[in-house]
Amino acid sequence: MIRRLFIANRGEIALRVIRTARAMGITTVLGVSSADAASLPALMADETVLLGPGPSSQSYLAIPAVVAAMVAAKCDAVHPGYGFLSENAAFAKAVSDAGIRFVGPDITTLEGMGDKLAARALALEAGLPVLPGGAAATREAVHARAAETGYPLLLKAVAGGGGKGMRRVDRAEDLDTALDMAQAEAQAAFGNSAVYVERFVAKGRHVEVQLLGDGTHSIHLGTRDCSIQRRFQKLVEEAPAPAMPEEARAGIENAAVRLAQHIGYRGAGTAEFLVDATDFSFYFLELNARIQVEHPVTEAITGVDLVEQQLLIAAGKPLALTQTMVRPVGHAIEVRINAEDPDADFRPAPGRIARAAWPAGPGIRVDTHIAAGGEVPPFYDSLLGKLIVHGASREEAVIRLQAALARIRIEGVPTTAGLHARIASDPRFAAGGVDTGFLTGLAS
Amino acid sequence: MNEDLPLTAEDVAEIAAIIEASPYRELDLSTRRFRLRLARADGGEAGLTQEWQWAGAAPDAAVSAEAEHSADPDAVAAPLPGTFYHAPQPGALPFVTVGDDVGPETVVGIVETMKLMNPVHAGRAGTVAEVLVPNATMVAKGQPLIRLA
Image 1: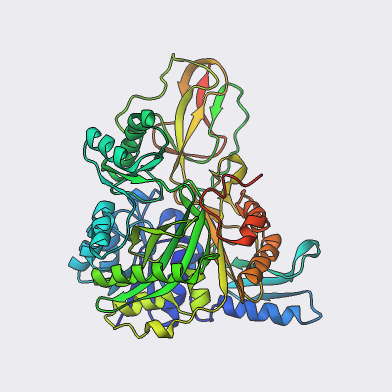
Image 2 (image 1 turned 45 degrees about the horizontal axis):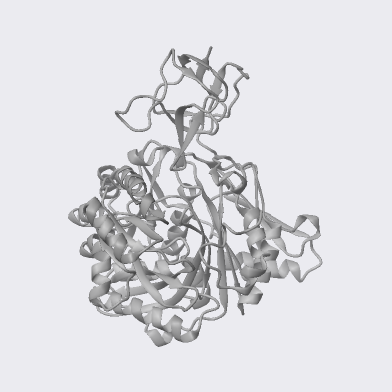
């Protein structure tokens, strides 16, 4: 039983966790930076504790400060949200050493999945297909791998995430330069310059499977398609993955469960796959051992509160859900409304929100921490809120999305809302099943 | 602070459906904690919008410093708010020092905003006369960073 939950995050996900914790009768304690002291989550939490100044290295990422705050607040569990310390094994260990439950998987899982090469090896053990490629410790080894995979290929950071340290290489003569850049970026972002090689799939779709496990049993909650991305970061997500044969979808879902079962997964997690848009062959990419930004589309079609499931599993309860109890209904689409300028290469745009009018109505959910007068600090990511629509069919969801986007009025900072309106009205998007090259090809 | 129940997304959707089926244009609800305005959309689109205001949700004065700087034609201004750095990484040499000649495209520093590094370009040819802001300082949009001669 969790009584006092520390929330080691900010923004919309902090609010999201507070909402479910409150419904479960759990007291919430939010750790905030000074830049977030007057934020909406700070207002909504039962208690707040100041972690430090605005920059996240001195607040949300400062493990000693965060652990000291939850100990002082006498919390018995911590929800790390996504990003920040959510998949940090050292943080999970410090939390556990302090006698506090970490709402997330076991430390060994975090260690195994944090290293992308180790995750690849575990997936192979579980019988999942992975892309041709693999470890390459030296420049010679990178060239040898490249000769195996052929071009184009991707260089990826072993400690990677969020597209950092990732480089596409089209020709052998570009390999050395790209390798230098990928290693430098990986070193700067993760403190680890190691990279590995993977074949690049020309027409790839990004499809992921929501998993829940209690350490003994694992189930899936269906697929999400997140192929529309900028800088390898997602902008639009939908559930289930559209325009895909039922047997292909089932194959991916079963593979994900096989992996979760193989590693005795505990908590909510997401197995990411690259799907070849031409023949639906699929390859395991990575397992995200946390709640995802795009979890609401799965909640919309399954009716399952994923944060509640996380808290129940963290409290030691066995999964009450079985695979046959999960019956997805309809189709859901989420768009990320970010404070950035799509016409200026998605340049981030912090500032004060003069007005925030979000759509409202049946089949519409808005997860946001932004209201009129609110400040978007320059220290954190640019997500202002998520608009999620749900319809009986994908067609209905797309129409609902178009109508909802036409009503958004956010003033004070540029946002991605207009770009989303263009995406939603694009005939290829309406047809469904676009690949990761869609946004580059979208006429402005 | 949670004496009154917050409205869930489902509550808002239900209230919106009631208004849509009614002759009313909007609902404006104020409590001690929040004000919610549910209204038919501007410009004749079908459907409703929700606008929230929260009592006590005031921005932190320290980070909300708006750019109120006189336009100094000799200064290179911050293109956006964030943390101003003199060098590409800790310990590295600064991009420019006093006395350096620069061209319009010369990078004179970087501003880190929302986890992205944005180069600051000199914008015109000249000579660096003064670096106005210490390394790793929070700057507002438009704040003068470097004076050119």
